[in-house]
View 1 (tube, rainbow, N blue to C red):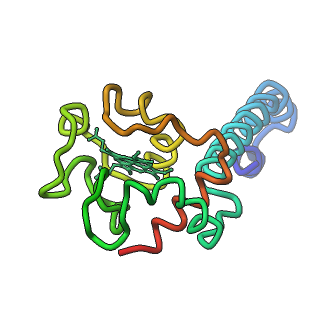
View 2 (tube, helix red, strand yellow):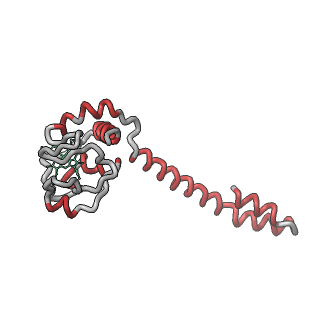
View 3 (spheres, rainbow, N blue to C red):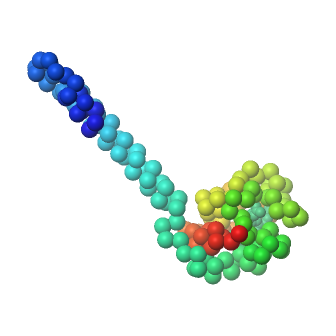
Length: 153
Ligand code: HEC
């Protein structure tokens, strides 16, 4: 839109030439802005999908029961490393926890999106890791757990 307006204002001489020019250029900015609009909404949709729409940390605390047998949220190590403070932590870096080779070599920082991917399918994100857990298929449950983990320092 801004392009068309500046073209109209800018062409002072010869209405005929102006109209001819308008006809040839008219469609292009429209198409460009349309595809830009599509690209923009695709990005927005992507962000909305990445961010849990209505993640519920309280529900996540309950769902974390599936993890709590192996993971403490108090800084103690169990069968798995503690998960308090996991957001922002580099994978495989809790001192004193004996990670698999797969984890030691993983170059991942835990954030909402990498955690979601890992909980969905641990072996896909970090092949060969030793976490005996096949993954949570339910996206809402995963988002809730991530929201819960994000509340823990
Ligand atoms: C039966 C035990 C067990 C269960 C259940 C389990 N984990 Fe794990 N988890 C592990 C082990 C063991 C590792 C370390 C794997 C390795 O070194 O390969 C791990 C690693 C992790 C890590 C990486 C932490 C770091 O320091 O990099 C995250 C995050 C994680 N688990 C989240 C979860 C979540 C969330 C659940 C529940 C949905 C869960 N785990 C269920 C045993 C378990």
